[in-house]
Length: 273
Image 1 (spheres, rainbow, N blue to C red):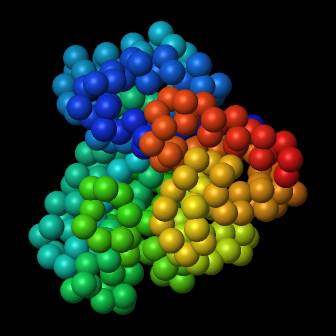
Image 2: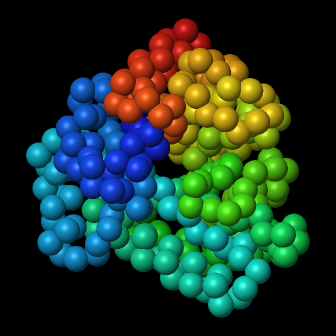
């Protein structure tokens, strides 16, 4: 089992400089992680000096950055803004390529009240398909997620409803775009994540392991303490001989102790499954 972690609980500390990127690399070993994940917000500069400093950290700690997460808003009702979002995303692809990051998580965009379901699906598919060739050229795999809502957005993700997520997946199936499957977001929407996982497994490259306090409500808790059917999903993955990256999205707001517990609980759930 290969485990990395997106440290949502540490976002504020890292983004304000209270915790350095080197401290996050160093914490990986203490937390029994095989790799770490970055939000693109961690990569504040595109300068040669900054990029080299991150490359040196990877070499020093021998910890790969498995996946970076970014938040393109391809469903924005303004056409010019959608073009900006595409350019921002392509810049993220270039930066990930230079840092040797294998996966970049991509979103559809926000559920803007002005955006119809038909238009939103078309625009999300268009944005992703227009990025896929560049991703292939740069050696990055884009991973589309069944996403909910980041703190950086005003609205929930356009594809939070699983039926919209599945429609978009169907329309990008013939591309190199894979899936980062989040177990908790489907639970938060009020459906069974295993049902959706079974429909998309051939495209799943990473699992975002999350846990929700309640079925049908977006309220993340420490992995292993909520209602998300992670053990059922893990059991199915074992049955299908799935052996790729589990990328914990740690949102318990318990700091490094929460991350350590989340990693231990994730490995324990896998063993029991």
